[in-house]
Image 1 (cartoon, helix red, strand yellow):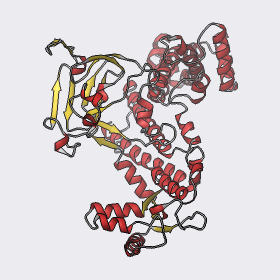
Image 2 (tube, rainbow, N blue to C red):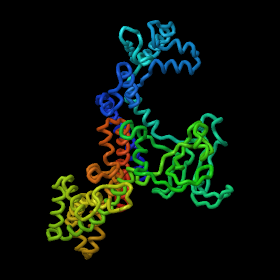
Image 3 (cartoon, rainbow, N blue to C red):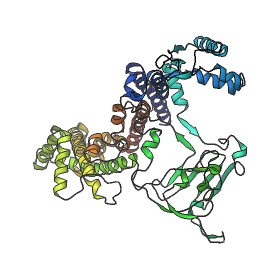
Image 4 (tube, rainbow, N blue to C red):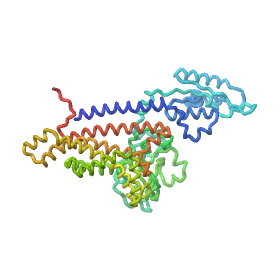
Length: 535
């Protein structure tokens, strides 16, 4: 079994790479890259050369190409010590006048030759003038730049090598900015929950283990709090893909996992001992060089440059809402469908079987959007909330989305379980069991149900993992702030990083569900073996 699982994991990893590669091929090679500017408010305001340079810089940001302006080339030469400040000033494009310095000719020629030799395309835009003068209206050093389209293999390699980042004590480069020695500190009493007396002595401590770092990017690498899943970490970060439209500046993993809603302040103890009601999440504190010196307010609260942090919100994350609804739907569906499917099979062609069949036909025939709105109207008439409120503590707002998702799942599971059981009941081994003197109850429990339930069991892990992806239609109808419509939103906004990240996320869930389903199926029925035996 172990060899089978390892083999499936290897095949799954290869399949995931292929799927992501196909997604990148569709996005970056077959889709018109000009579409990313449809929702860009700045792009229409740009003019002439400035618009062109903005366009290429955005394409680089989205991963289409590598873009190198002449100005960046000069800055790199200056930083490497190849040219001094005076030469750098002379080598830049003139802003006024028609005189072109010798340094401009020299270094623009050098720039072109260098990047042409590396396969880059060189673009030199015409200077834009006002009236009869020679003043350049826009562009400057952006008039000359080089670019090269990123090949698929390079883009794929860059994506997967940057997929996982691990924090370490050498993240802070300059020792002069670091307060204290580099290293890790484990404590059973998280300082966030420590209260101090006026004289600075400890008033009370809370048992809350935490691993803290100095020299790391994040102050807290591991910590515990009262929020699900209660144990958290900042040591390993998964970078699925940066968003530039849906949630600009945030990775897909952060977009799906950060809390939403209004601020949720609580009493917290800052590093200098002040206990203040605040929504700052001290457990997310990350290092910002020089921030303590630059901000007087920080000096009253912090002891070092670990000052950048997120805020606590009252609501769940997108994944949290989708999974909460999805897992309740899965539990409800299996709890109802299994006994009902068994009753239908045991009472074939009788009243309960006909009622169940009518329900299955109805739920399959009616479009999902129609019965979701029907349930929404019925729920509203019964006084149930029909829209989600992230700041509400009421659990009733979960009822309608859960029911809307569970009812079709119940119908599908009932249909298949009934079919599997009837197939088993008509098998020859059942007739032999009866002739052998076994009671109907023994035949049912030992043979029929055990064999019929195996395909149903295989789908349980997939149903649970699929709960994290959310439900597009249901979440939109009930305005659930979940992960269901994230992919469609990213596609409509041409947010390439989010699309690729979600493709990877869905692919990993699919592979995990298949492997876990096979393992669970072999546990339920030990006769099933996925190990090939020589004959």
